[in-house]
Image 1: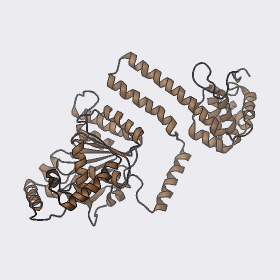
Image 2: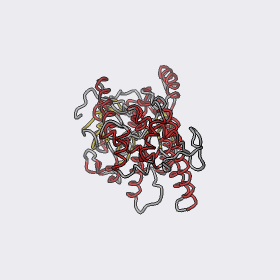
Image 3: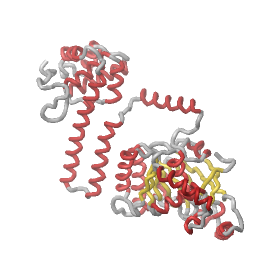
Image 4: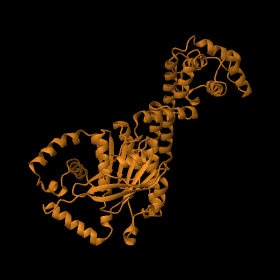
Length: 471
């Protein structure tokens, strides 16, 4: 039984020379898995074969899981036969070592303690391997310094996720999770599964923003796409009190906050800028300042960001502030990590980077994007092909929403609308909100259609229409 012998210095919590490990804790886990289904499920949830330092323990762990899947039970004889069929029985130390595992733990009561010891040492080993890999990349000199930083952060994040989340890949666990989510939604009698947008019809059409998905809101300039994004952020952070980060590449942070105050208080943006507010408006504004100041919204207004820099910043925001939504305004202002032969290739890298970010951090990403002039020239509603450098964005986005305002269909109508708005601001009229259509042109996991909204340009505020045809 030389193969299966235990080093004399292998005590719980002790580190043998070399990589961190604890042989007796590993034995405690494997023994507990044979004694208790609960211990088996817990170990399966928190560990994988690589969590064990000894190759023999990795083989035994895999054999126990195989038996659990095929026989729904584990005992010494079944485990012996399973390893024998795989040609690994003698390699792991034979029947004698399997017996020793069973006898090493008289009860499975301490299984969770053993599992945490094994997982802790596995993380330590992975940290050492990661640090070694980072050091090697730095010494080779094949990557630029910024790329090395991004790669290092990504590797370290992967190690952190070993500690903060459990990797579940078997179908049984996934199905249980899905069914539990459906049952919870059924009990709530609520269509919302993801993060609320603040618009009932949009929530019904999309069930909210989903973790790991990228939603693109696209429009021509001055249609209101940034205002729509701010309306959503206002609801998420000031109503739902959920943390979010807004990367504003076009507008300074002070202006973003000013716009949010106008949205919240229905204050005319020009009056706000001039300071010509009524006493009631001043009172409402003062009361709302504290609410906005306490809201969990973080604004990054760096004027130019590479997609690698944005991903690095977003990772820190996710783990320092637990942000649940990442918003970017706007996608085409981001830069690629390195120069490309064409702008389309750069946008493809940016689009793929946003999708990778959403999946990596398991949060929804809301990206504002520009449309080209085709819809204006042809006097029609926008479509996905109008997205500038559209191919990659169409492919990577999970949801594409096109914001369309019929009142801006031609120059004459736009001039008329501007004149009417000036009259309203001088007290000559009080305009209602203008119709706006949010066209859901693509939804990977849901229907397409149209959400009808009203837009008060004076307040930068979108609201739902009384009826929402098309959804």
